[in-house]
Structure formats: C-alpha cells, structure tokens
Image (tube, rainbow, N blue to C red; front, side, top):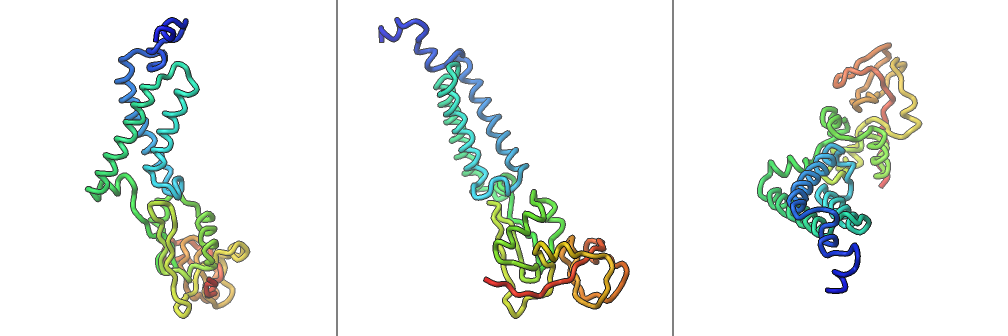
Length: 236
C-alpha cells in the first residue's frame, strides 16, 4: 500500500474515479438512466428490422454494457466505479422493465411493439405496412427466400416483434391469382389493359379479372398500374 501511495501520479482515488470527484457518482446514475432511455427510444424508432434476431432489451444491454466496459479500459480519466454503476443501472433497468413487461400487457406493447399483419389473403394490408420501417423490395426478397413467387400463395404474413416474418400458406389447391414478385415480371407493369386476364395492382396486390380498358383504378388503393397475375403454386 505504501509503495502504491508513494508512486508519483498514482492514487487509489484516480484508479476508482479517474479525474472526477465523488459527487460524479450520482451524476453517473442520472447519465446511465438517460442513455438507457435514449438507446431504447432510438431502437424503437428504427423499427423491428433494425434489431432482427435480437430483442430490443438484449441489444440495449449489449450496447450499454459494452460501452461501460470499454471506456474505463481506454481512458485514464474514466474511473472503474462509474462504470460499475453503469453496469448496475443497465442490469437493474433491464430487470425492472422485464418484470413490468410480464405484468402489464399495455406496457409490453408500448416498449416492444406487437406483431403486425402485412399480407391478408394475398393482398397487402396497406395501412399496417406503412407503419413498418420495411421497404417493398426488402420484403419481396424475404418472401422469395421462403420460396414465394406470387402473393396468391399467402394466406397471411405477419412481422413479429423480433423482426422475423411468419408466413401462413394456402394449400396448393387453394392458391389464388396474385401479384408476382419475381424481378422480371415486376418490370412488365402497365396502365393500359390490352387483353382479358387476371391482373394485380403493383402497389397493394389487389387482384381482379379485367377486360381491355385504357385506365382502371384499383378498388383498394386507387392506383392504376397493373401487372398480369400469376397462379403459380409454391415450390417448397
């Protein structure tokens, strides 16, 4: 102990507090709480896709603890005790919020969100789809990875709170005409219907048998751009 105290520029206060005073510990509690809330709100704004395969809380804990662990390692003026308080605050807040989520359904929905239906009976749920931070092409890519080639194969598609997409398929005998989502067919959209066939609105997926007409507005979204539908069955 005497040797440690006698070494120039080396004190236990500096090891424990860095360049701060004891009063900074209380400030660290407030800083930890504020940053935890900021990270949580930021991730909620990013949406489910931003935290895919990790829960919001898992990512908050990883970011919070990772930062708290790194700073005292690299910066001399960052003490160990403030970092320990950050650890305690993050773990404590995580435990409290997890408890509240398990006890209160409204709080759970507010913090974690809830599953959202994106496709219902082969047609986009437009209002719900707009709420999600998810691009159409990104969504189509997810469907293609699940061997979906047209929306008439899907009875319902739901984006879970984890960001994963759950798909419930029609059996082969019940597959309907729907919007094709392969790249080349999507490039063949038109506003003028030249022959009688099933057509799908490229904006919402609404599908209907149409006869030749120069302009026809979709019954759901009022758009007027169409593509020939597909009734191709899914290849598992």
